[in-house]
Length: 346
Image 1 (cartoon, helix red, strand yellow):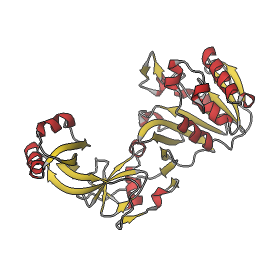
Image 2 (cartoon, rainbow, N blue to C red):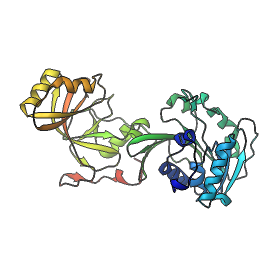
Image 3 (tube, one colour):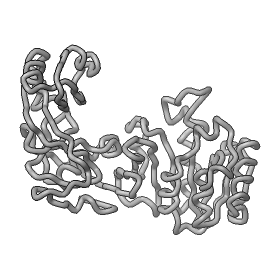
Image 4 (cartoon, helix red, strand yellow):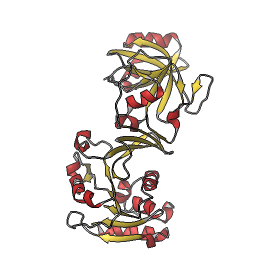
């Protein structure tokens, strides 16, 4: 889209769907003959959908609907969109056969994030009124949604990250559902799906450490991903994977493990000073340490640099000295796994 030709309000722009996410979702819905965008706002999703199918855009706010109409006209898409001013809670909707819908409730109330799906506007439970008459339905929810609030729905749960940042979550119903859980990384798209949650071996860190993408973490797919990589976990409660083989996968960030030691400020300080390290990057998972304060407490002097991971291995606190590996590097010890394909199921 050409943002210079678009019309927004500040609030509507803040809540608008990222274009890359809207385009990805519209691609998944492209086979539907008509899609109802229920709670369309300024229409980031409506405009992406209109490039692929007929759209009915519904919102209760006259101003945002007018902005969508203007933007659709600017992009020569107005003929593919019907604009409906209506309150979703007050209309008994009848959907034509074969139709799909995208439900996008507001997840902010008075500038604050809603803490429950029933605090959305409208609440997520409104889905029950529509599901019987729709071929397919997609409902957007907060990426921080509590899984126990949505696990009773018979749907696919997808978490989406954009350039490593967790952006959205969506529930896919009907003909568009293809798995129980899905993690999708953009750009790409790269998707990893699984229905089961296998057990992984627990081992001490091997030659390489893997940090799964935020979408993998949030979708609970760490262990299925580890199984597909042939990797193990370093702790049953920690979302780090490890292997003696270097995999190039979009779903993980890889580190070479240089050293492992029991955690302790004095021990780590002595180790780094002995190697002339003056600058350190500290990451943590499963550790209560304040990384900024810890870095300052090291009081390092030197020209060298190092990366530390503060975590647990089989329940014990450890410090890992690691070296980040560029994502596209292909060395003699690298094996390209099937997990790098666009859609993966173990």
